Amino acid sequence: MAHPATAIDVEEITRIVDAHSTLEGPLLPMLHAVQEAFGYIPAQAHGPICEALNITRAELHGVITFYHDFREKPAGRHVLKICRAEACQSVGGTNMAEALLAKLGLDWHGTTANGAVTIEPVYCLGLCACAPAAMVDDRVVGRVDAAKLDRLLAEAGA
Image (cartoon, rainbow, N blue to C red; front, top):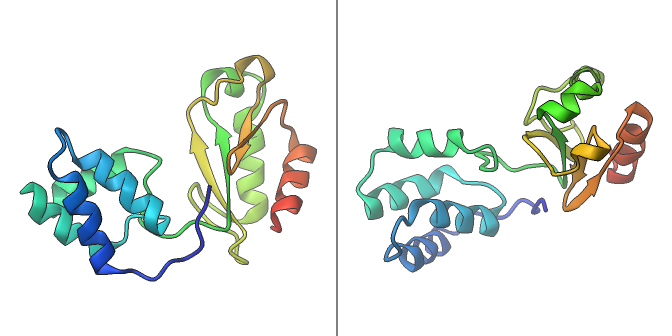
């Protein structure tokens, strides 16, 4: 679920980093915890994470940008994820997604001007039999078409 914009508390970042630094393979749990706390991975977290794990900022950036669920800027109040996997593509999901992005004037990971909705790709929601599929915050929706997308956006305030 999307989080409201949160002021960046460097002490909170330090607490998160410290709490995860003793884990085996701590980077991903650390990043998930930071994003849970702030709604995204703020630039202020990069230094403490890199220092604790003895990695470069380039290495950290590579991990953050590799995993689609991590954000480097706040999302809208709601996140609409549209499935990009083969089953959804095969029943028109690609054209539907492209039409929606064009209609909203956004690229993937873009947020509507009013801050209501961020549009993100996802690579399988497990609703292949009900494709195309989407997810609004934590609610999965099957058999999505342009009209259903319009209703979902209206419910989200876009």
